[in-house]
Image (cartoon, rainbow over all chains, first blue to last red; front, side, top):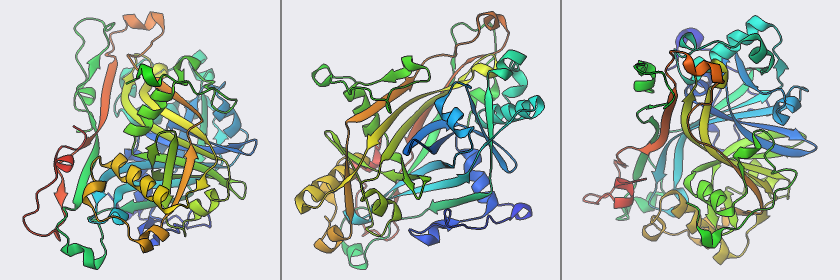
Length: 222
Length: 222
């Protein structure tokens, strides 16, 4: 939810200005953070040899920095590590919008598009902080209970930081908007809300006996 | 599910070959179709003025063609209509994978990455067929009940076709894979399955009275 104390605005740029249906555009920093924090996977776009690539990957946020990570052998991370332009998009699909006309069918969603270049995180303590943000973004509370990275794993993880400075949100909510004359049609119209829902956790068969399922796994997302 | 009668293979190219964790890569045409058909939103990547853009958009599939559509005024569609290279990615997030070590946390997912260039669909009947595929992809059965596009709406919709020829799927399933010595740790590990779930449909307050909610809306995804 928007917190007045963080009611900062990200100044729109030529890249982030929402052109199609501009009333759906939003440059409120807190709104951008809320969408990033609720999402689990981003789609990361970059250009290599003139060719666009869009790769799904997990991420974490710490204040105004977004972190991604992976193997130093990753083609994507090696490319991003060279400072190429990135477009990182997170989309939350909130529902299907069924109008009376085929033409006005739509979807309710919240999305963020973030532009920038990444820099490599080298300092081991910042790297650890980023990885904690990463783990706790996906499963809040998990970091405190797991075996932390050892020096070899820390070396074997490339962490990149992307400033959340040039970004915009785009949001559609609400019922279908039909052409005025179509509201008289005897066609059902409305929304089908969608939600990414967790099902009951599946304990690894190789777990030590008598371990309790942690409440953050038992009640994930609730 | 893979159907033997369609057990065609998409020949891997330099762009589609899965490099990181190659055993997760898959070039089975039916598997690619299944992921595309289950997804609702793709992330479409393209380059404009050297800058990557990644835009979420809906899509439809008809045999070996993927259709996208939108307003002829859309910056994205105008760019794609010029035949620029596209990378289109669909990701289904199936679960969170909680390992004993922070390092081995992962996600279960199925994704498709599709490369190619789009061509504009001009013939009105192919355009209608594409829009039907589009609507019925999102809500199976919906097209037959709605007011079809009139000539003005058909003109006001730009439909682009992308051949499903150069694509790969990437899939991770199953429990966490920890380092051998970590299995002795008294840390709960397992999967939290995730599913995009429909909630009860919300009837538009401007609907004509006494309309029944269609079963495809009432039981969406079930």
